[in-house]
Image 1 (cartoon, rainbow, N blue to C red):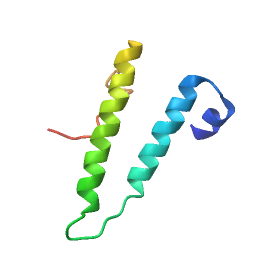
Image 2: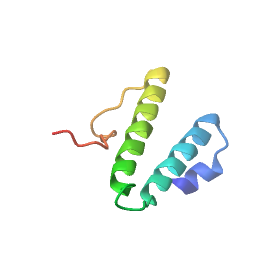
Image 3: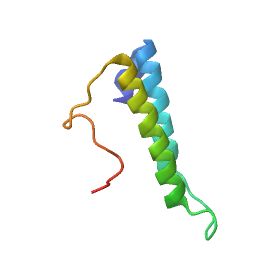
Image 4: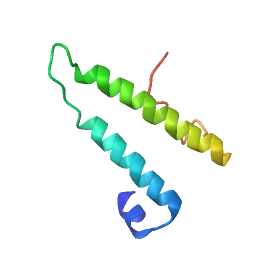
Length: 76
């Protein structure tokens, strides 16, 4: 996915690159227990990324189908 994005210079691909960088930084998150637990910070950051991505999809009028969009928070 990143290789394809690196070849493209469209505005949309730049936005996707930023989201990929945000997700990558979340995956590499570590904290200093016991007061700064990485799992809690990762969850909170993932929520912010998800909300931002959904806002972008809503703004473009895109419809996220269940097959293509997996909720990163498991609430059930």
